[in-house]
Amino acid sequence: MPIPSSSRSRGRRLHSRTDRRCALPVAFAISLVGCAAVATRDAAPTVQAALETAPVASRGDAADDAAIWVNPVDPAASVIIGTDKKRGLVLYRLDGTVVQSLPDGRMNNVDLRDGFALGERTVTVVAASDRDRDAIALYLLDPATQTLDGIGDGVLRTGLTRIYGLCMYAEHASGRQYVFVNDKDGRYQQHELEARPGGRIGTRLVREFRLARQPEGCAADDELGWLYVGEEDTGFYRLAAAPDAAVTLERVDRTGGGRLVADVEGITIYRRPGGEGYVIVSSQGDDAYAVYRRRPPNEYLGRFRIIDGVVDGVTSTDGLDATSQPLPAPFADGLLVVQDDRNTAPSDAQNFKLVPWSEVRRALGLER
Ligand code: CA
Ligand code: CA
Ligand code: CA
Ligand code: CA
Ligand code: CA
Image (cartoon, rainbow, N blue to C red; front, top):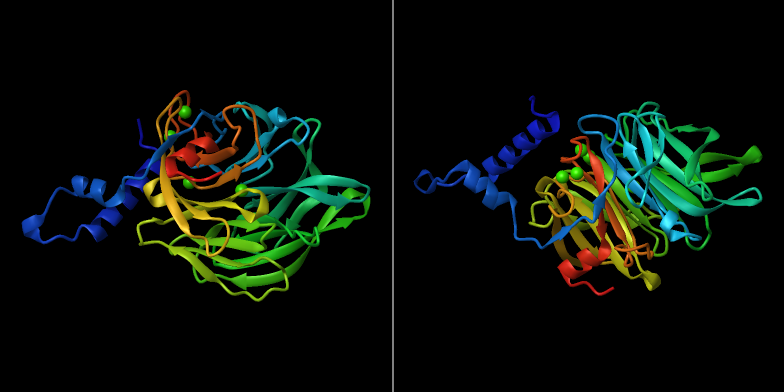
């Protein structure tokens, strides 16, 4: 059976790290395999996923990012929106079964916000970065059916040439909503969502800036007004999310210090009332997640891995999302959803794992 391409590239990356870190004198040479195990694995605490979603339809490296929508009327009828970056979006129930599959294009990242004023209605907007059209794909989430409706003209071209990461921001004071998108070349755009006649939504480009290296993951803190952006090679940064704010990047953490191993991938925020909570970052290169205090200066609190349990463990995560909202057991303290690069039985197509937040809290000794 041929080795999946994701496994091959994973092997290359492990060896390249090994080569760098294991430049020992010949007299002390040890096996590269043993060295790799030492060099790439710290003794981070471990947690287990409670369940997993159905696999995505596409083969190979296909699942990527997730967004959790908590149903305020019936939390049990909440949904997880996942991207299949070769095909489109997939909506899952909390038991991992599929609600809806939308083969709308190569959607890479996805995010959502409740509370957008559209004419007489207040709607939930879902945005995804569409790599087929270098565009922002917009949908409305119907709370009654927990499905997505495309918006007429809901594909908004950006002028970017290799669109990649995406996240949304709802400015707390004004209620205005924004979509951040980035290009593999480092360009970032901030678009404001605008209600248009006939129930349409348009966008207006309100700010542009640039990172030095390839970005992808990002997350905005609506209440505290920060945008967190990752540079896959180097670490992640904090800057003011407001469209008229100066672009001043403050480094939160960097690769190479033992807490983040490239690529720095998905970033999400576990929000508690009063500005409390945590920022969680995928340390893709060593199959771990780093956790920081939500409030700047974003003190580092620890890291963890997701190992085999009821379902298989998780490696090489791209996107992730978290909520602190109470959901049915075992997610009473909230939920962390992560993409899994190497799914095992009953399918080897990629999927998403659902981790009870209580597991993470226990593993790292976090307060609520
Ligand atoms: Ca991947
Ligand atoms: Ca997301
Ligand atoms: Ca990436
Ligand atoms: Ca796995
Ligand atoms: Ca599995």
